[in-house]
Length: 475
Image (cartoon, rainbow, N blue to C red; front, side, top):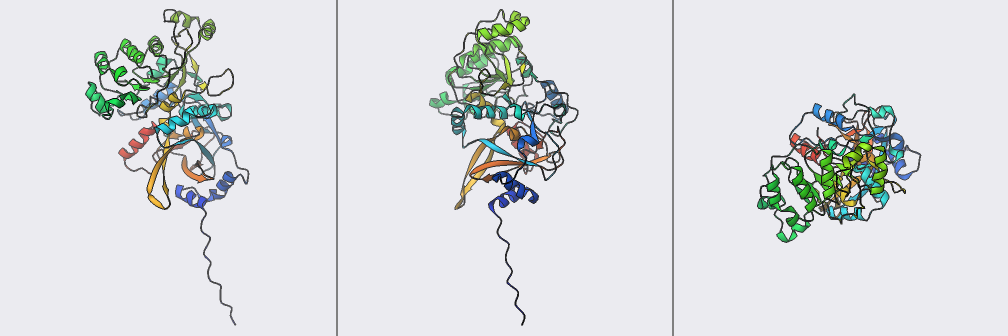
């Protein structure tokens, strides 16, 4: 008598990790290695073994790359962040690494709270991700092949050899992006209030960012806005594209006691010194971090730079701005910057210009520079923030946006359209913590920059441009 065949058994349902992997497009062949990496159940290559951070293009090279690309009125400034670069060849659909999230927040207040309460190590990592500090040695990629790696948005070849010195304060100031004339110009106080969203007059002291780009204001018009009186708490001010003489700019900066980040038209070195000396709390001018040297340190530096002594002789003996660290680009005036008390500055001797490392070391070791202040970080990390939406399983309509800042190896990926990208990025949740997964979609040579599409899945040129503008890049 024939034995009936057993009923078919359905395959077991996929686990949560597999579902997430399919949702982000991760190749199935990476399911097992990914699980091993998350659980440490098997040795997997650490991210630092596969990729590192190479020096960003020097300003002259970045300007050349920008000039060779199609430009528009809203062309962003080339990024000064270090570049995530392959240490060894990466294999398509095989090589991957994980990127933790440094900060997770719901709004600007929560972000500022996280920065103010963050440890020095956390702030140092955020500074590296935002392009305000030099990566630690274990992340740096200093081989000659990496220095000449492809750095353009589409992997432009033939990049000049990188240099480790930042330009003087005014040299980076020349990279200010074009103004934006598409909106109604600010001409008087009513139009300024309209630009700010018509807040109640009683709340103007809480305004932290003012964007006056391309409004064509002269010295008298800016003085008529009475910014120090109306918005005394401004920490981020952008006045590029206005006919402001240095004297008017200096007076404006001096009147804003909470000013931390300033965007303006290109300045001569001596003018940059004057503006920074007039505003004791100013930390960034046109993406370059201002370092204030005590008198003793300045005297020691003058022995090696007599020319700087001569140029500083006629300057007031106050705080000294020195080009210290290029930021991620122009001030993020759209993101409110919280006010902070101006730091107590020791008497210092100004220096007109200074050649400094590409960024200040972001470490807490004695004798080395501390990480930037939270207000400086807040103004600079806009282009490296990402967002996702979460919903309750029992109430799918109850959703909220969550913002985060990835670790430097994820924040420093370059942009390229999908056809030229060589990696993809997806987000997974494991053990109660979100992480980014970065995997190669095509072969990547050692020393080649990693490029992702920051507007992946977004259709339409206008929609893509809007998304890419947030990240400070373009197709």
